[in-house]
Image 1 (cartoon, one colour):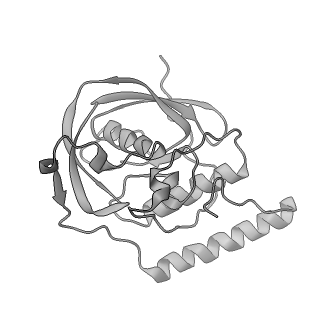
Image 2: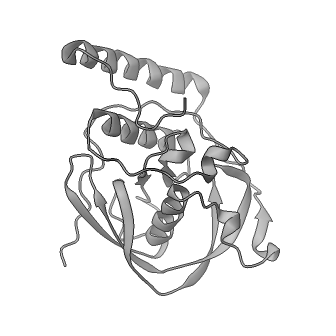
Length: 216
């Protein structure tokens, strides 16, 4: 079996966007498959990566968490000691788990449930199929922590949050260290660079490219 991670994105800059927090009902809705790969999907991937990286310690994000009901996720566990064989930055469009094996409990946090962690049983190995932003077939074989993060993000596409996965209330704990975000002035600078970049591209292409499945 050929295992390829594919390109994470097409090189464009993304805009850090607000992350929805439970009980926002959008987090409970089923995300839609992307019928085609276009500039809107590419922009969504770029925004997901930018949002993820604006929260130090965040290793994955799904499109519904930023208000887009599209089946798109990004993951990057690079440099984490729990994932020595990580694939690097991953973006997947229309991902699905085609193989899962093993089982292990592990503690997880979530930007959409910032005050909570949960001990959850996950498969220790998964094979995930999907598309890259270029429309290429992607097949990721992931183990351990990277496999856990992929399963966590794919749950978001089906409206599933970490507290839905626990076996008892004893598996839930308050989060002792809150998630952090880059200072607002840094985020504003990133936004300005992206607006300038996108504005130039729109003038060249003769039109805009809003986000796929954006919340209206």
